[in-house]
Image (cartoon, rainbow, N blue to C red; front, side, top):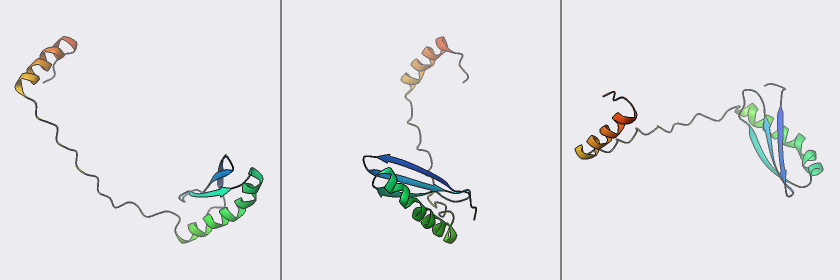
Length: 96
């Protein structure tokens, strides 16, 4: 495991989101409460938790969800297709 660690803290109204990241590993996100000083005091423990997680599994398993096929486009009626062809021919050349 890499010793390089990136820590990002977003602090708002006494609550913080703390992100811990390392190359080749999924980021770990933690929620902490308190002032900046209090949150900074918790950072070493959060980094240790992230490193322990990465030691077991640096990255989460890839999703096995299959992407659904695109839905078919609705059929055009001959009247609407003819009118759109005429309008299109004025704006741009017809390719079909």
